[in-house]
Length: 324
Image 1 (cartoon, one colour):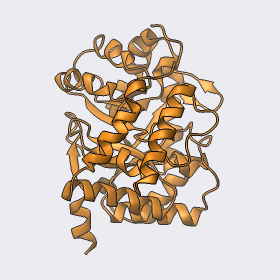
Image 2: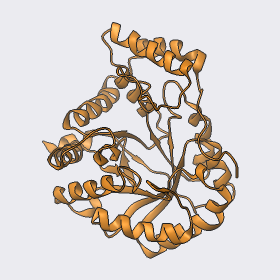
Image 3: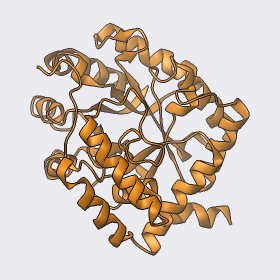
Image 4: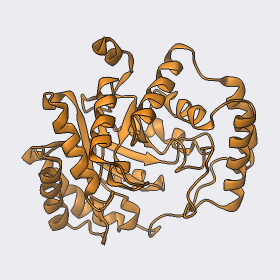
């Protein structure tokens, strides 16, 4: 029965890596108690349920919970007691609780620390984390060459870059040889309120780069409870998303489910990362993905939500040093 369920969650090719990732990816930042305490028992049950339902892609970072996310995810994956090649793990380097350091020396140390915490011999993907907070020329000339050496050593099978402003991806990819960067991880740019990533997809495909999309709920904007107080969106954007969430609730719909299905509906994006810290969240996210593949999107509600958000469409917020 579990095997049949496992096959039903769609797997998608990730660029030219040969990896096939589940369309819903497991964002492990909540395992670092980023959104409140999660017991080890709860964490293990959550990861086990995700794997049982066909999620094979798990994403973390030493930044999440000050290394706690990596440690907890490592314990959870070990508890699965399945062969290492049955799951795909990505972690990151360059961003830490005590700040940013994209130097070759630091990222080389970083992978060894991450592997120890994860209790793994290798990760499938090692990302430079939020590169807009560095000089992009340092990323091109120092960090990525260091990551290539890590890839050659076998400690990471593939390398990627992550960040919020979309221009960082073209800046770097235009300055490194083809095949140097395998994957990009973008967040908050393929949501109902902001689909700017879509314009970049043909370019990324032409470069053979796999695409991972995170924060399909726009870091809490597209939820009934709304975003955390620290959310950097403008008051106008927050108000529009609040109105969209209220519309959904009044009509017996859940804006988070509509938003996740919107994110999953673009086949040019290999996996949509969603933070999860309970079995219930795993069940809801997988159910939303399966409903999309069988019944399709709720086009009526989606078009109403898009109309409410139209005045703020593709509005974003600044992130990083904003210069090469």
